[in-house]
Length: 466
DNA sequence: AAAGCTGACAACCGCGGGATC
DNA sequence: AGATCCCGCGGTTGTCAGCTT
Image 1 (cartoon, rainbow, N blue to C red):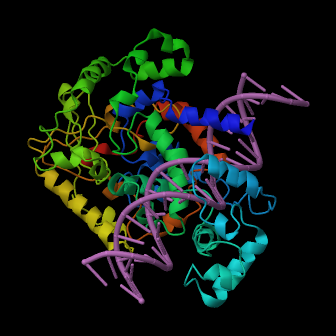
Image 2 (image 1 turned 180 degrees about the horizontal axis):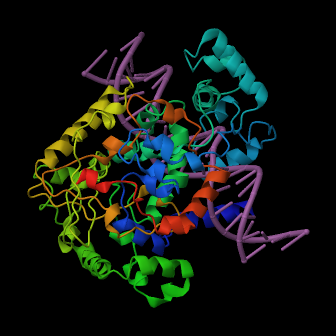
Image 3 (image 1 turned 135 degrees about the horizontal axis):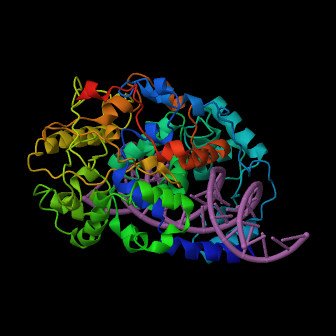
């Protein structure tokens, strides 16, 4: 049965993603101030007030972060000694692999507690020097590679297991938009998290979520081909009351309908990047290797011309322009266009090269921002965190931010992301992402009317930023 | 209750790059 | 300069638990 299930799973892997209607709605109209406000709207206006407060991230979700702190989750394999090596090797053989340890009679598969203890004891005494000789010296029938992986991904004492916080997830997404699948580089900026853990979390949570949102998880750009616009416009989708609610909020807007049609047409015209991509970057964009490192604000932009009153709002990692039905302009004052609280927040010393990449892209973002006279902002404003659920973007004015100066770029991340000089959020248990309670909570949260009708409370004086 | 499906994640693999000989 | 060794990385798989049908 198992192999049948796996075969079916494999088939699913190649199957196209089922379009999820609600994510289309999320995709283009959801303000992305930061996902936090939208994902976790609070009914307490005082928690909304510090909209541009660096302490927002820790405050905004406090009502929902009361759930249990991170719990240590132990490996399901840890106490399961019974492991069929023959079966495993058979499977490996079927996969066409050449098992690296089999020829040496070395054990593979799940680690036992005894093995773990041996490894830990040895490393505590001698350190983890030569992985090749370590297993022999430690009395383990494992290859060095296996020992290293076990140590680095599981046994290392500084590993922070448990659920990912919102801050961590946001950091992962931000960094992934710049670094691509450089999991180790991303992990170096998430203390206590391993690259494997982040990779798994990305693949099992974030990636799927982005896909359902119609966002290319590689480029972090909207992928119109992931969306079945025609099905959106199909009346059959009206079956769900929730969808209907969303439709009432989103599709009723004629601008949205126009946008939908424009998206359909523009989806066929995405090849031409000249209008927004400086020469010299074109080739990079064509290079899939480079694409991973291309912030999406330099990518497909053309649909925006279909939408009036779009502003140029350059985020540190997510260029978001918010379509407005009215040119309600908000110009943030006293906002450092290149604040130190964006990527320069990362004070880690490792991966200087990747830091340079981040820095470079930051500069590129700045450079691009200087082109904003001609720069066509990206149409979509989407929320990475809209998860699997309905998150209908508000079209109400207060929740949209525009600049009345096309040259005015400002980074929401600068004011909404993890506060500078505050490493604690990343380790905080206060905001939990993955886990039984939070996924459910998030589901409930998204389904709630407060989510669907998210608005910035009156107490937030938007005029202050106008 | 059983079968099937899905999510999650530990563990494996091959490959590439740097260090060393 | 070339060969080999070693390590780390990213992609992939296997397995289990829980859920759904």
